[in-house]
Image 1 (cartoon, rainbow, N blue to C red):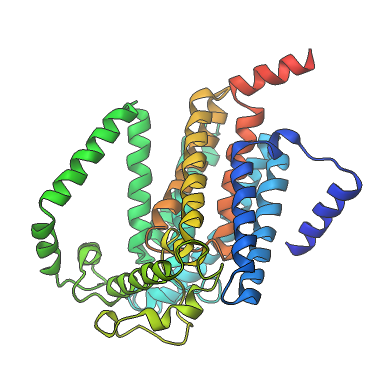
Image 2: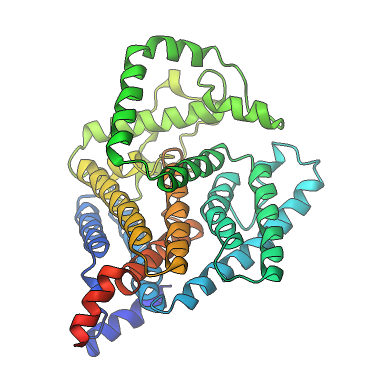
Length: 399
């Protein structure tokens, strides 16, 4: 990936050629802003070398899988190739993981690490399954697909469903449910203002009954379990479930880090090395550590808040919002059913990751950065080359 970045930059310097429509897309501008702010906060970082490595890693994720992929995806056949090539590789991991898991009787504890060495743990594995789940389901109904391919795709959907359940990734389950809810909202053509009203009502109910709600949550003693129903119930256990409590511990530490450095933060990628002194003994759990070796803030939103300040978090929120808006707009203005399917599959896949981002963050890893930026490139390519509005603009230029 670093080699591709070098070649890309060399091409820009010597040939000065790149698709202007991609370079000038709103999503591209937000990416420029995020990289600029990352560079600025690297200069003020508590650990500049760590932040510089983090910045370089982000560049070698974004350049190949967004800026180059968006050009490659001009041909819609390449979008389908990208999806299926990644799914094919992921299927190998799934089959391996399920086979290994069977040796331990599919118990919940083994499900946390059995996907090694392909994924560090079940959270990243679950996130990868979730982001591609709308894609494999979408291909089941894809226009013009033959019966034999539909039968083969049905088998893939079954395998992904089994893998998703056996991942014991509660965040992954929630993210798929959120994507399904968004899909139903789009299909039922529910107006945005009704969603705002419903959200405001729910928020009002929460604040009005927050003490009763928290009291009810504190009474939930159900820990993680191999039983599916019990495992779902453990999602709201904020009293004894170590995984849930550790997330709260990390989030509290992230907020304290932000309070100390609200403008520039502590530097990109530094959270896991600086948060330890900001833990409080009463909030620590049996899986807490002071060594910076057990992951980061477990939030795609609070992590940047601690590392790059308030502006860093707003940039992430802005990026995610524009991506979803663009994806849904491409769906509504797509030239044909194929464009609509591809855009909806990419948008719902990204929504699973953004939902997952409330509980984990993986954009600093290749395992999730590759599909994330690839899906964004799909949306941008479809927006530029295959929507009614953009097609009219291209036709006018050709005239």
